[in-house]
Length: 231
Ligand SMILES: C[S@@+](CC[C@H](N)C(=O)[O-])C[C@H]1O[C@@H](n2cnc3c(N)ncnc32)[C@H](O)[C@@H]1O
Image 1 (cartoon, rainbow, N blue to C red):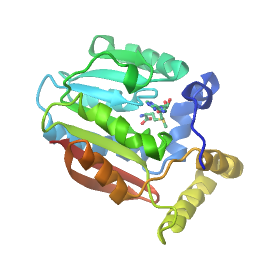
Image 2: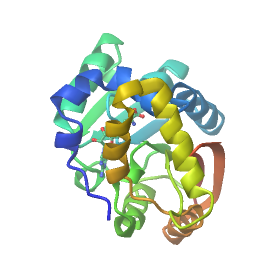
Image 3: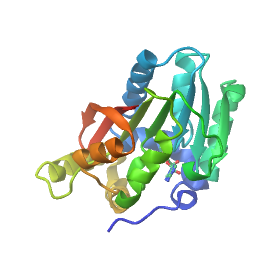
């Protein structure tokens, strides 16, 4: 049984300052994921859109999207105070403070009910236990306008399926290349905190709370990326 993370422990002060150097080594295609995010939201959203960013971390997705369209504004939801601290510095340095508001906490405690024009959950849903994922999807859905997209990226899979072990091994090989002697420890740590769900079960959970047109638009090793539209 994977453990449930405490964001202020796993994403503590030490991790928050090295996160932006570390994460592109850990996550295959990390940089390109944000380009794909722009591509998805760029075609879906109009001027002045408000975007809900769940699990914002140090706000890389906010910086990328804000650069694409200067009229978009953001609510960044992030439970780790140290990650928010780094995010605030980056947002301020980019001159974006008036376009981003922060909520230090999980989505359930965010007072702003929207409705938002879009939401993102980039590299965050795998921290949510399987039996709680539908509730998080529902909490996002209820804050979105009709036809608003949710874009997600995370590790996914059914650990019992034939394709799962090779996909995990490919990720492990990737870490061997990028993290060298630290790969074993990092792989053990992240494996311990991944809450896997199959793609079909995820689609069912999303459909059950009012999302339709769930489309996987990217796959790399054990990682997937999806866009789902609020019905
Ligand atoms: C791997 S980082 C991803 C950060 C950012 N989205 C990115 O693409 O770099 C995952 C973030 O999700 C946050 N997180 C973990 N559990 C969460 C939850 N239940 N709700 C919201 N955020 C959560 C963590 O604190 C962490 O900052």
